[in-house]
Image (tube, rainbow, N blue to C red; front, side, top):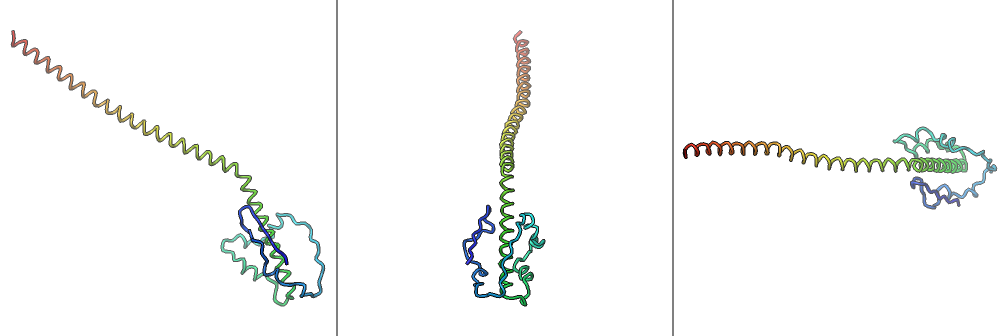
Length: 178
């Protein structure tokens, strides 16, 4: 029995070590003109990803339905159908592994830029807080200055009127005393 264990950076495609229903089929009991497996040439990751049908990139994609439609006709032998399913399973697992590797590489490559961006956002937040404090203090100082500019002249005017009144009273008293 074949066992699979897949790990990825984000846990996508992560499977516990378990047997696939396809792997539980005893293919040794099904021997129909066995042909030795051909050694396939090494295929690049890009070529493997290009083999993904365009439907895989659709949000509404139904993988089971798609796979069932692609499955060879029931006229093929049971062994050929099992072989096709195993090959497709291995192919999809490899494609998933490649996508996860590319995604994790992209995240790691952009991590420093992400950190720099977060530091700039934090600095901007600190600058905004400082600016808010400066604005609040400026408003307070303007209100204080406005109050002083209106109250002081009024106090001066009131004091001048009192002085004028005192002088008028003083002149009257001096005239009355003479």
